[in-house]
Amino acid sequence: AGMTKQEALEEAERRRQADLSEAERRRQAELSEAERRRLKEVEGTRKTQEALSAEVIRKLEAESEGKVQALELARLKAEEDAAAARSLRVQVPPPDLPPLPLEPVKSEAALLAERVQALLQEADRLTKEGNPGEALRCVEEVLGLTPDRFALYLTRGQLLLALGRLEDAATACHKATTLDPRDVPAWACLGAVMMAGGKYEEALKAFDAAIALEDKDPALHHGRGLAFQCLGKLEEAEKDYRRALELAPASPETACRLAWICVDQARPADAEPFFRQALRSNKAWAPAHHGLAVVMRSTEDSRKALFHAEAALKIDPENIEARDERALALWALKKPRDALTEIREILKRKPKHAPAHLLQGQIAL
Image (tube, rainbow, N blue to C red; front, top):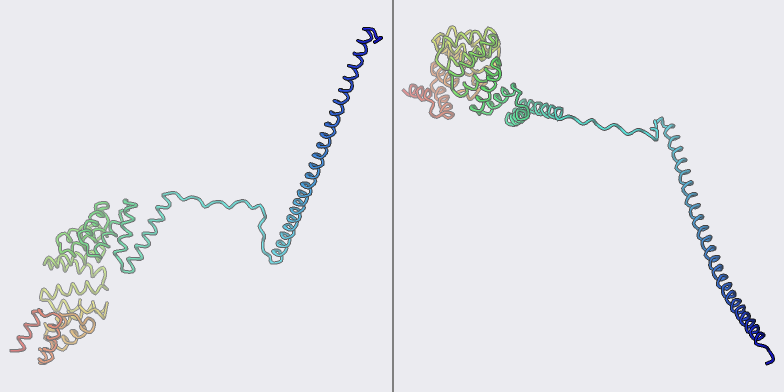
């Protein structure tokens, strides 16, 4: 009560300051406590991270140690393998070999050539095995791949002829002769196709063309002689057969053809040497024995006729003409029963065989 106003104001200011200091002190104390808690949390986090880092490091060290051990074991195993290989004198390839070169890619032309060669070899094999149908399939495939192989048209014609497809064979041979007019085998094949089809004039033209190119092939003269013979031109046929026989004296077929020309012209004496020439070339040539039986019958030497007829039948029991000669020889030798037995054998094989019926009638009389 005794304070002055001034003193009262100063006292109030001191009290305010004291209150502020106490509030600041309490605030600072609170801040210090919060900081201690934060620092404690930070310290705990740090220790946790250190513990985790230590665990990770241990694991990495363990894994690294395992890898080192594995590498060491692999190295030791490689050394052992190398030592074993050296003891066996086996050359161990180096570990870093360059990659092997890839097989070069073949061009389409090379692949085509390989395919064509394989087909041609297959066709040749099948032909030799007597399978013209499959061989023809191979040849036609080659022609489809390489149409410019002119020689294969001849091969195709020959295979078609073997299969009896005469029209197709003629077309193939005409194609071959058109592509190469100087192809002698193509003309010869065309002649053979025409003969097989009974077109003897066309066959004659083909053989003429072939002989104009090659005069020393006996097969061409034989073929043309056969065409002349089928046309009834026996003199021309004889000339060609003689020429063929000059070029190939050991051909029994040509010798027999020439001999039969002589028989057809009633010249048995001229025929006999050619039949015997055929037998010198081939003792088992049945047509030659049959021909000699005919010649011997014409000279009334029935015993020799019987000998050659039976020789022909021994080689070829189905030769009806040789059986005719045997029956005639037996009849001439006064053996009618044996002759009738032979005639019955003939008629058993060929019921409408006129010569057998005629002889049977003569014997019956």
